Length: 271
Ligand code: HPA
Image (cartoon, rainbow, N blue to C red; front, side, top):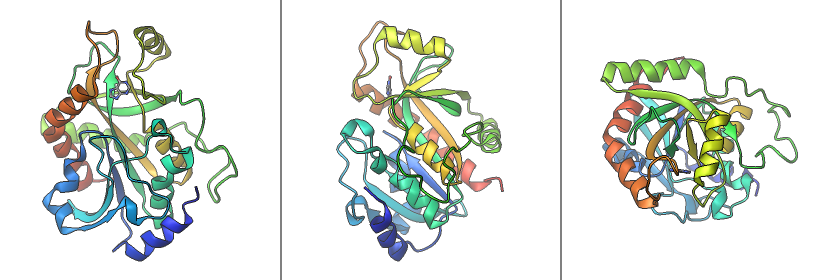
């Protein structure tokens, strides 16, 4: 899919150029129902040409343009996952739209499984880097100008934003972990053997989103920050099976802390 029709519609509907886009991951969508969001302009995905309705419980399916903590923000409730069978081009279309609308930055949030044994369910983790195990790359195909054909990914998660997240967490009295997010397609959860292998590779958390979005956001020239809500210990770390339900419940339990952290991040967003 190309994003040009969706961009035309979005440009006509968007009340302003957002400073920041915030992608709300599984179980973290409550900001899209905050008072600021309710006072803002909500655009359902289904209004945007080429956007199908999302299929996973816990994923809303709208963009909300609102004034949030003194900034012009677009909140994305719901995202397109590769495991839903969507083409990679659709998975990353929101990043293209934010870039082309003139946004400066994107905050990507997700629910993830924790591999690092020092981490606990319910912890929030600032992404320091990622490992792409999707088996593909969202930039395959004709280059989308004016972004570079071979974009640098050395500091894909903006170091100044990460420092800012850590400072915000300190001020709030929150523990914020830092670590490497390993992204893969899903939708099956990993096997314990895979999780042991990923630990050797250097991963601290594992999930089914974020990586393609971060790559395209960087290619669009957006500054990127990432937060994982560690909603379960990854497969085999605890002697129990994984369920989507526990992921949603842990996300809901962390929602208050997550919201406080995101609000503080936006309030004093570094230049
Ligand atoms: N693995 C992959 N994706 C996930 C997990 C997990 O353990 N938890 C939440 N998203």
